[in-house]
Every structure is written in C-alpha cells, then in structure tokens.
Length: 148
Image (cartoon, rainbow, N blue to C red; front, side, top):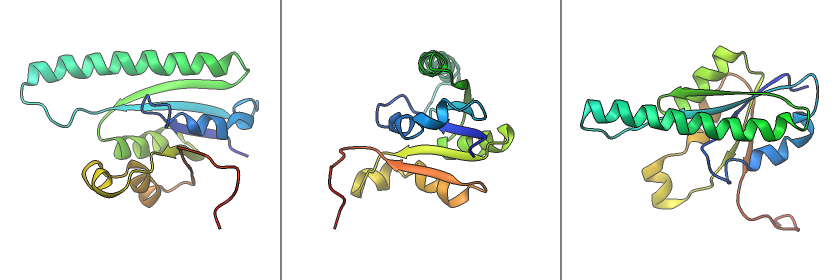
C-alpha cells in the first residue's frame, strides 16, 4: 500500500503523466498524496531581483499546485500541496524525508544527448540518492505494442 506519496511536478503536462499512473491510488482513503514543486533560479545577478523573482515563482507554483489539488480532491483523493526552494532533486529528497513519504512518484522527461548533459536528469538523481522507493514513468508518446 502506498501510504504517503510525494509527487514532484514542474508545471508541465509531461510531469503530470505520473498522475494518470496513480489514478487508482489517488482515490484510496489510506493514501495521502503530496503534490510538490521546487522553485529554483540558478542564475541571478541582482539579489533584489532574485528575491522578487523567487517570490513570484513561489506564488505561481502554489497556484498551479492548488489547481491540480482541487482536480483530485473533487474525486475523493486526500491531497495537499507543498512548495519549496532549491535545486529540484535535492528539494524532492528533502521534502520526502520531512514528509515521511513512503514512495516518490514522478515522471521522467526522457531527455537525451546534449539536453540531458546540459539540464541534467532530476529523476536520475532522485532514483540514485533516494532512501525510499521511487516510482518512475517516462512521459511522452505511448505505443500500443510493447518494445521487442
């Protein structure tokens, strides 16, 4: 049973793909879902501008998570939202520990080549360093036949 599920979202439809995988769990009374978003601005030169930007990003993140939370709360899910600051993978792992999550469920964007090298892989870092199970799904185009 998945008692407390931390679901990191970045605001993209690709990241929300995990919600479809968890549809059954979202409606179970025993499961609590924590929708999570990390706010991180790695490049900033003006401290005042950075404070305003982070504040604005936190507000956007809260609004986004509230909208997603409401969708699932209407279906009977026990769901809440949490916003944190910091590099995404580190913030996800920290939140999982603080929340007592029993599993982290997330989607991988499936970047390859140069994009993966430049942007890194949040999901790979989470899988590598997590002390709890990670349910990972690859978002993107689905096919009706399994690969050979």
